[in-house]
Amino acid sequence: MRFQGRITNWKDDQGYGFITPNGGGEPVFLHIKAFARRQPRPVGEEIVTYELQQDNRGRLRASAVEFVRSTGRQRVVADAGLGRWPLVLAGLFFAFLGAATVAGKMHPLLLAFYAAISITAFIAYALDKSAARDGRWRTAENTLHLLALLGGWPGALLAQYRLRHKSSKPSFLIIFWATVLLNCGALGLLLTPTGGRVLRTALGAS
Image 1 (cartoon, rainbow, N blue to C red):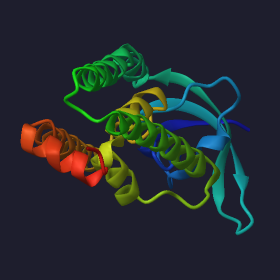
Image 2: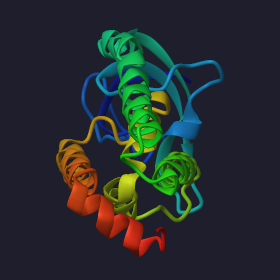
Image 3: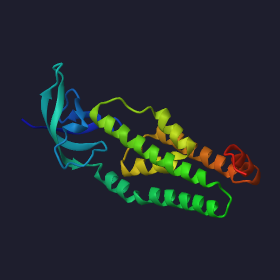
Image 4: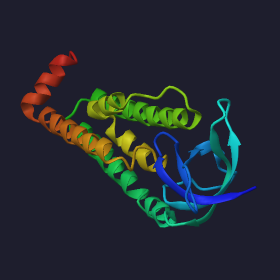
């Protein structure tokens, strides 16, 4: 037997939420794995149909979930439309780093470091999203913020919008953009003559 309700309290970064049944009743637990194949990822407030099953503890949870009418679909389309600006921003940032390196204002190792830690940040986001879907041990948010602060924010930004992970949590995004500003400020200091000398000394360059 199939039931109908609305997705509420959806936590995209953790891959679960609840369905409030039409006509009232106790909310039903919903996990991302409960969606039928080829269904788009929910964003909350969608109308769905579902079946009920019991877990090992006898608690009800939704299964075979399918969308009926999504009030959040437009948000999904909007997210897709924003998918290019993170790529542009990251590309411009690395173009700036490359130009500074060619002009001799930045050590080549710094460019390599930014590239490596950005890749690391993207992978960390991907692993965290996978863990959220599978109910496994998550990557701490402080770790993701640390990677961004150290220079991995371009990779983190791409992951947020390409993977749609950590892109709709205000408290997380506030700290994320603070780390971006701090990192860019530190980079600006390193590109000054004094900062450049300090960096070359630290790297053992002549």
